[in-house]
Length: 586
Image 1 (cartoon, rainbow, N blue to C red):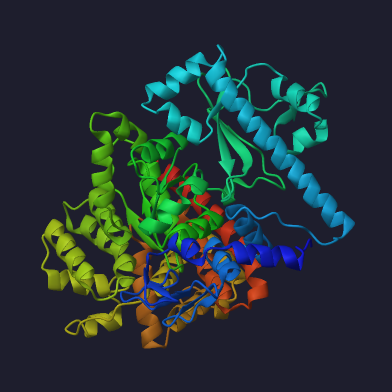
Image 2: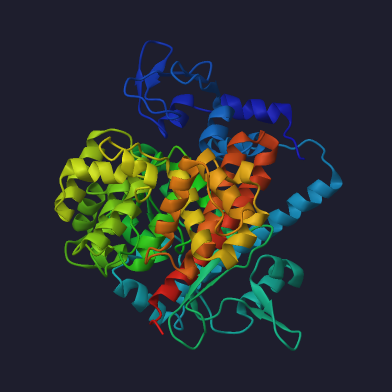
């Protein structure tokens, strides 16, 4: 790996203004001739315990013990390695850095990547010029300006237009000394059936997709008509571009997000532009609805709180639920911005007074748990006892994750009011991990204990195994019960279902009561064959999460990749199940 010369590193260190650097993350106040203090950016606190020494160029938190020099600060806040921290600081403070002699192969790879980045920067600049200077792009200018976007905003984000000609970028890049191989590796060309090459993006509005330093890694391109096939086309995955790691506009939102302590996540490119134009510059785009682990990691580096301002349709709601699953276990506060039905952020900004209204909605964001509760109440059938039971069962794991607090009491009051139930009765029902088992009926006078969310999930899976034994039998046979189940009672029930013959007597009263409850649960109307795979994958996700928590640092990467694969499979299974549920009964 390439290394910087020691003199270059020291030159960067000397150039850093430590107060300026740290102030981008937290507000600092002078606390004497040689120090500044502020709220620690690395943990939650109310009283400042974070100290910066501008002369020595060091920081230290007396609360969480975080500390180090300027390079360490950038590594921790930007999620980068030492070399990239040096590069970021050199760029910020205008220092020219030199490299020591490096392995020839490593030097070749670095130079090749640099060539691709240069080509992508040149192409982005060409697209911008073509948008504003060409007659062909007039309809694109009319479309963008017609959406209420200003030229200054479009230029700041380097929005452009790809000509409709087949080889415009290809030819210009070749004339500038780039090979056909480099143009293809940058994702700018496609090979046709006849073996020839042509431009990947043609007749489309282009949005540069950048890394946190603002370097162009690829493009998202929008068609303005039906003649070019898919509405959106992206740069393909490569050594340079990974869509799942990119947040659109993160390079421009970084400073504002750090100062605000929160970042607004929207779905589309024009939504990001509209919010920045409205003064909400701590906004980024997730470019679709499938939020990835890498994007969540980048969001957490931008700010400790994420406000989801996704479309208010069913796809947007499902995206918020997926976001919560991906963010689970991270120190990240999720909130939801209540957008009006049928309106996306760009639509709101385009309306009269829309910018002020959108800013109000952002301030009215609610905790994600409240969104889940209100969503369940809005979509559930509260007219009868069975419908209320289904909603309560849906809310049980939600409330299990909320500690005793004012928020919890408010949500209990909200649900009780909507269901016309006494709050005490509702609290009791939410605490049960399923319908009453035989052993629970005998103790009905005592308040039941609340089951952890993971145990509820495990029992749900076993109910599906009982409902569909032709699916449950093979699934149980493949499981490692000691590792796949956290609950001892669920593990014993799984072993019995796997190993015992139908009709065999259960001698253990506790196990018998649980199996009875599971059989009752298996007969519920919501238990459908299409959701079996969803339940199986949810069980697998629980195991891989525990494996990640227990694994040494060197083994976490492979496990995280496995978790992302399971999340994708889970989302696909959920989509299939929802589609099957919408089909008319035969």
